[in-house]
Length: 84
Image (cartoon, rainbow, N blue to C red):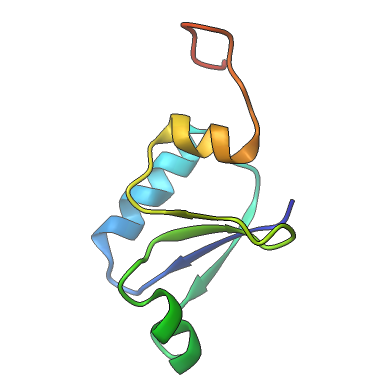
């Protein structure tokens, strides 16, 4: 799975999303800034941050938490426990 995080410069929500991805222990991902691309701005401008599965085309819009990221990635934790 190739992951892309669409974000903006100087975006506090994007900073929060990065922290959530770290908490979820998401695999490596590419960061793409939408600010200087008219097509990306039109598609993601009001939605950023957005995590996208570039291979499958699925997208996870903000707001999301670590559990939502793990579910998006297909990583299931044991009932009642966070992954270690």
